[in-house]
Length: 195
Length: 317
Image (cartoon, rainbow over all chains, first blue to last red; front, side, top):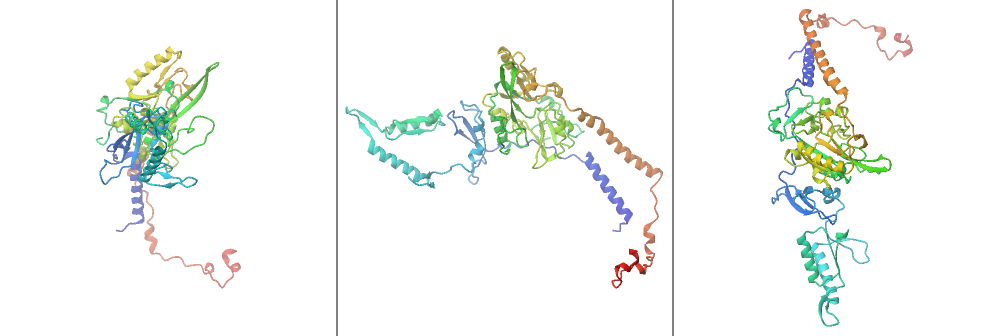
């Protein structure tokens, strides 16, 4: 295509003119913007209890995916549980920020063991941890269990070990915790609820 | 329109009217903030950040309870703490949750020059669509409450959306849901005004004779309203404007200057065309006809000769 100098200037002028008109708002309308998509649409909702204080607010944990086999879940939002009688959907600033607590790099995610006198914490498996706890409890109970008092009455006391339970438990969890502790004969039994 | 969960009532820098057949049926929503119930726990700030995927920088303590110090592109709501001696010997701690008021007559939308960067939904929510934002900052000039903030990261304006994504599917905003004392409530605007009347009557019984609802008519009413213990003195609450209105600069620019300018542009185009038709194009001698002429002979004295020293060359004399 032969373009003379004059024609070249004309093409340039036409191009600048039409693009200016577009910039001035004479362009065909683009698609209207939408509100941000609702991010919880098909997430999995899981009920739980806030781990912080003794109020024990109910929370709803939203995780990615629908629990399909090939899609491991990942917690992406946490808010108050409106059906929970304690908080009815509300959360304090600590509870409202639970998401970052869950994903915190400093969060302990596995049992760790520090041998007596050692400065080092070493990760151990849950099985090892439970086995060790059970073994120590049994050893202590076998050694110190009081079946009868001085008068010969059956008391079934185990006073050399105590249990400190969490407060963020439901009624049912609390009931079971109580049953387990008392069935072992444990008397020193307290709760974090006074925090 | 079919893509949207909320109908658009007004759109920035757009003259074609939005479809408004269904607007009559939309329920105007409102958030009511009862300052007399607020304990300043900032759960709303946390819930806002969590829901909207924002994380502001960790700041430093400067000796006041406000944290962060001011609204930012990452903090769309902040609690403003004011210690006020309302009368001699009577100190009150007034805590106002600051953030977008969602004006019925939004100054930001009026001032915005970018089509579709600010929209108002038929339920009253004023929303920023950052993908259309050009970062000019006119919304800040237009806002009577000094709310929008330009991000240093992407130079776009951000503010509270009243959780339009939650409201669009029938939920309450994140701050409302989390509020432990029930100081923030959300519902239809009529219900919220009714709720406020009950609170104001209660406050008046308790000796706050000037308690009142903050729903300023200078901006057409707002979709975020306050119950104030001292309704006659909103400026006590961290300088909440008593009678806010859109800056006259906005109406001057959008009302007179811009149409005038558009007319001027049209006039210039028309004048150019008229001149072309009546006078015709400007004729200049055809430069290309001269292209065949041989170039003028070079002046031998000006030619570069490395054998001659510079000082003897004529062009240096």
